[in-house]
Image (cartoon, rainbow over all chains, first blue to last red; front, top):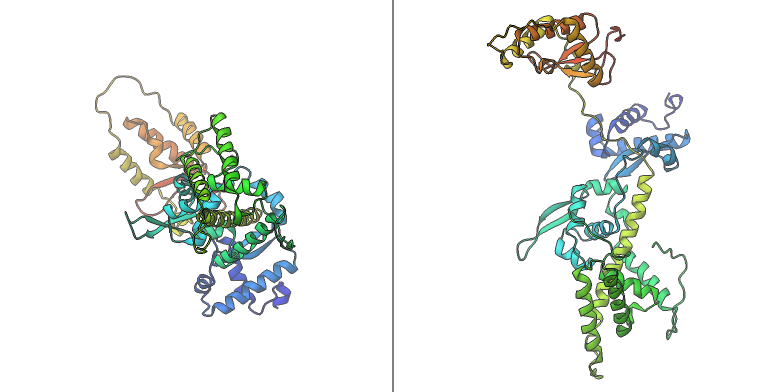
Length: 210
Length: 246
């Protein structure tokens, strides 16, 4: 029965209901929410159904899939169809984040909650305008007030930030230690160029991103 | 909203310093401070020559570099190993900033990837069930007309000018309005009508159009606003098979 319909899982009806919800939703839906909407008690059954759907889309060569983003599940088109779907949204997509915005939000993402002064201490420049833009785009929000003079506002990233970047959660980002390691390798590679006392062995597999 | 004029590609003094370090293949843990100060100040000079507005932070950094440089010139106490290198704080800041620049480029990559996939855009608000199902009766229309009469200030002074409004004219006006907006609020059609006759003629025109199936009148509940729709338009979901306009 299930296989005739094309669904691979054992929970064909549940899969179809979840599919309908994901299809209609404009935001990622968490397993908990899907469970509540479908009247299923174990989220395990939900995630199993989603896995089955994903497999099904893959096997039947659909142009979309279910991705995990911002703590939920969402239907998205596959990247390979970007060239065609983007024509549909010509001029409607929001602009990319600028370099200052990326730097600022990176600091907030890793150090939240953080005050503007702390951000500025790291970037070495005024961040007022950038911060306002990030708040306006709802990628950052005020999450509290800090200790000290004037009890400064503290900023944190929002769920929309995860959604915007297609991140499942923060563990999706490399850790600060990982970033430090990458940088140390790069620095070592750079320092090896001039006649240094003991040139460190060149690291392989290092990709320079900028 | 503040606007920032970007000085070449540098986001700030730390960014400029990192650029110089990279360009000259300098070991960040052992920065030749007088060399980098010279290079840094040369950059500031160029920016000044180009009459670019230089952010205050660039000057603060220039001062910091010069302070470190002078500290480096002071004789060091060989015996005291624990004495902090005057460059240490700067190096720490540079490393910290560099780390987040790295993180920023990571985020940029994610952003790029995510831009290649598409999700459902923000959904239009779901209309209440009742908004689609309640048909409007003649009594509802009359009730709405009553409201129009109470809202509109009827001119009580009379000028003896023969009224020229005809149902046909009104029909054409309403037809155009519906054509343009595909849905119109009942009361809106009476905008600009101050005479009893004008209101009645407009009302008759609406009745005519409803009768002919040219518009469909719907309201979300008893006594609520009445909307007039062009049959077969998106905002109105038709369930029965009434004929399309034309």
